Image (cartoon, rainbow, N blue to C red; front, side, top):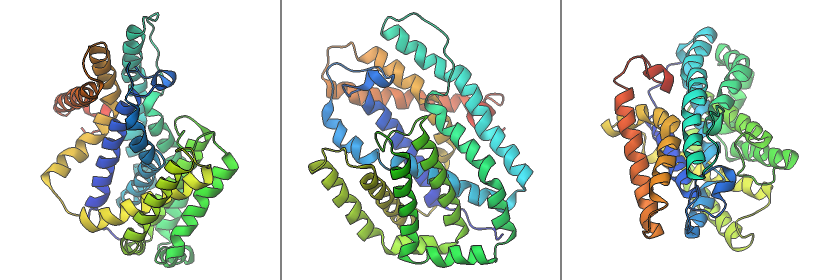
Amino acid sequence: MKTAERRYDIDWLRVIAIGLLLIYHIGIGFQPWGVFIGFIQSDPSLESLWPPMALLNVWRIPLLFFVSGMGVGFAIRSRSWKQLLLERTRRILLPFISGGLSIVPVHILIWQLYYSQDLSYAPGQGHLWFLANIFIYVLVLSPLFFHLKRNENGRFSRAIRSLFSKPWGLLIIVACFVLEAILVGPDNFATYAMTLHGFVLGLIAFLFGFLCIHSGEAFWQNVRKWRWPLLALALAMYLVRYLVFDLEAPNYFAAIESCSWIFAVFGFANKHLNRPSNTLSYLSQGAYPIYILHMIFLYLASYLLFPLEIPVQVKFILVIALTAAGCFISYELIRRVRILRPLFGLKR
């Protein structure tokens, strides 16, 4: 397989997607249902946040699965099967296990303190469920991936390149999203964490993320060419979901909207973000540890700020600021301590 130049647009998308995830998690604490899914909840709520959150929630997690599959697509170009599994074990499984034993119990403990619950040590997946899914996908799909690597010019690989160079290649991905939504039938399309729907949808997105990279430039030329119509379609579908369905559209509708946003984002990122920068270098390294850590500082900020008699809009801004500060200060410490680096997905 040919070695390609580094794709800075994909690095940027990973950073942006994790940044959106942090903002989304902060927003959950300001919704009237936040406590029911394990978040510390503000009283009063800030329900005006929900429409923009709902715009994000049909595509933010599938985008991360796509980008993760793309990352594997680049990784196997210079790695054997054993090297890939060893690397993914170190960078995904180890942080998942260590985070489940140390990070998750801390933010649960803060929740217990806030709501005057009995204190207990509660290890678990928590927000790290995403890592477990990714590791399973690598194990399950690696045989296919390396078969394609060995047969880069085979019939199937040529068919993928041809398919993804045309608009209907994107429709194949949309059809798979819609089929999953119909067959699995989740109560809500945006319910990804530790659900069958989240697992199957993530598997589909991860697989197609790899195939998009395997297709070479065909996919990128396609989404770059159609980025404006895709964005217009995504916005139109969101407005229909908002105005007609009160943001609770049928799953098949949400699946189509999800793909429209993802393809549009890929097209614009490829057009405008595929260039190096010092900021990207720093954020690309820090995004993964910050994702692992962020729930501790989100819960800590909520614990300290929610009881204060200040406007709820100010609380929201302060929670963002304190969460970000805690994450970045901790990252600066972690990246300087050799023994901690592997526990947060960083190379020694």
